[in-house]
Amino acid sequence: GGSNRIWLLNKELWVGAINGIIWAIIIAGIAQLWFQDGKISAVIGCAIAINMTAANVSGISIPLLLKRMNIDPALSASVILTTVTDIVGFMSFLGLASLLIL
Image (cartoon, rainbow, N blue to C red; front, top):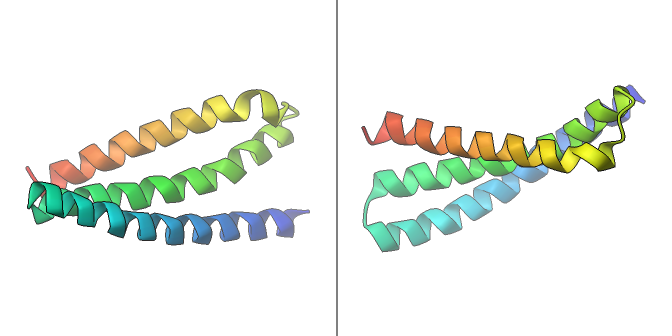
């Protein structure tokens, strides 16, 4: 039912955020060693955290939305999910870079 959907969305939000933060710290640390620039490391780390959280939430919400529209989620969810994560990834990285570096 509806409460199960909300529970799933909330769970995926938290799992994505925690996973994103862990990987963001790891990758930002590597970027810091590589580039020796805190701003670049911060942009990369934040963009990864945002993108992983968005991917998790999209990964549950897109199939639920497609099912509600009587569209088989298995047929089109992966294409839509890839598009969403690509757009969020590019926009978060480029947006943060514009704000923090330029």
